[in-house]
Amino acid sequence: MADYKSLYQEVILDHNKKPRNYGTIECPSHHAVGHNPLCGDHITVDVVVDEGRISNIAFQGESCAICKASASMMTTSVKGKTREEAETLIQEFLAMTTGRVPHEACPHIGRLAVFSGVKDLPTRVKCAILPWHTLNGAFNAVGTTSTEADADPMQTPIGDA
Amino acid sequence: MNAIQTALETRSSSLLDVEKIRADFPILGITVNDKPLVYLDNAASSQMPRQVIDRLVHYQTKQHANIHRGVHYLSEVATSEFEVARRKLQHFINAREEREVIFTSGTTEAINLVMHGYGRKYICAGDEIILTTLEHHANIVPWQMLAEEKGARIRVVPVNDAGELLVDEYEKLFNERTKFVGVTHVSNALGSINPVKEMIAFAHARGVPVLVDGAQAAPHTAVDVQDLDCDFYAFSGHKLCGPTGIGILYGRASILEDMQPFKGGGDMILSVTFEKTTYNTIPHKFEAGTPPIAAAIGLGAAVDYLSGIGMDAIAAHEHALLKYATDQVQSMPGVRIIGTAGQKAAVLSFAVNGVHPHDIGTLLNQEGIAVRTGHHCAQPVMQRFKVPATSRASFAFYNTLDEVDALVAGIRNVQKIFT
Image (cartoon, rainbow over all chains, first blue to last red; front, side, top):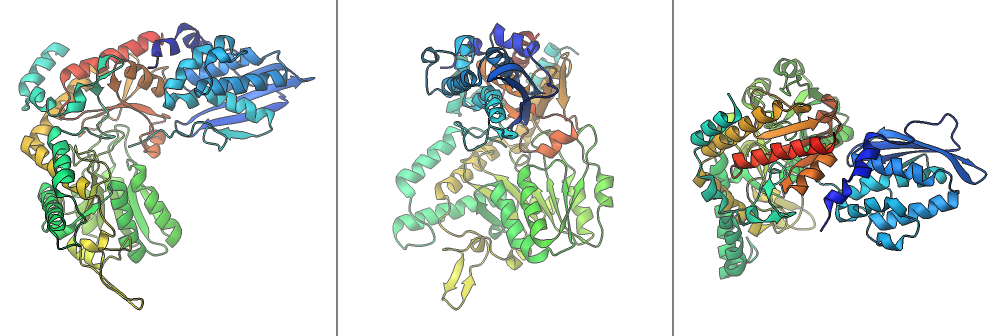
């Protein structure tokens, strides 16, 4: 059973309220827009990769608290890291939030483990992974990415009526 | 008047023995996250009473075979029960004849049937179809597909800030090219009850047929298709305490007879040779293939159940719930109700300042409260009210004032977490 209280814990609420690295970068080396068409959320991610290392990163957009906190913590986690290190972290984050790998088995996940509870909320997984999808899209020069893309590990639609 | 006085008045004015009714619904007794379930997502799908569940079990254990086919005992029983269900639905909406009642998979298929059977035959290049801002995507997209195919044009009736259709604007949209009107009886996103009877009379005076999307109206109010004088009326079983996979299209017999079939297959033919197929009479012409027999019979049991309680009593109880909820929620700082039409069904769409609807939905779920969050398949409504999504509590006759209190406490808790 999901421990929701651990999902909406202080660190996530804090990053939602005071997102770090929020905004845009004038001349990014990498840029992408991410959409979650099911809820209308969208974010942009700007990155400056300098000699293989992420020297600056920023995000901006309209989203729920889970998405915004995930984006904020993503930026603080990957800033200063090499692109390869960031890509490893993207894979670990996706594996953890989709429930494929427990957070204990993700050596680089660190405090991002606060998002591990989202794996029990299938309709919210996409909120947490949208920023990471978008960063991945930026690295691979995919201008626009979507949580509904083929590569998306979670294809759970959000129903309607 | 304070909330307690309102509650007392509401409690005493309710015509329903809600506790007795709730005992009919096994699912209402479950817990979610260790809290009693508070099910406020009835506009998406309602729950099923034991009477309907038992009817399904009885059918599957004693009566099942394919219909309109064999001469054996079970086929005759199944056919008879299926047609009995059709008559129950006929009476439920006061249709003149049972052949005007077509079983479909739901409202969406019913509307698509009209688009294919009527629209593709009669709507031509340059013709205009009038829809409204309040339509569910199910009553927008099929018509867009038709308009694209035929070179026809969609015209849209606007709404005011309360979420009420602007009837003057509707009337101004008519011209000699107007060939069809599609309008929802009740908005699924806002709850607005539209003046469909007047709109139909206006269209008919200009020779234009009208389809009413009744998906949100049929569960909450007595529907009389003869009084409305609509040409088509579509609704779903699963919002009416019935099973999923079954719905109804009412169509005026004279129009249905002239329409082309929607799907081809068994049951919808009188004779087939490779040279020529002769179609069956209505309603069978529109019921190709083996229908969801159990679901249709279950829907018959569901309308029996609702009629037993009384649609007027149901409407009165739901109205009391809506009034109580509206009074409480609109007095909460930082909460905005989206949709404040004078005539509303029991739908409360709201936005909380600074909190995304999905966070509201997850946090209410933590308290065992089920609401719908999102665009409600009504993106034009969201665009009109400049919100990406809303949270929506939608009430049924089995909901209680205590459950409204739980919702209000849940919203307060959300605000507390996000301050």
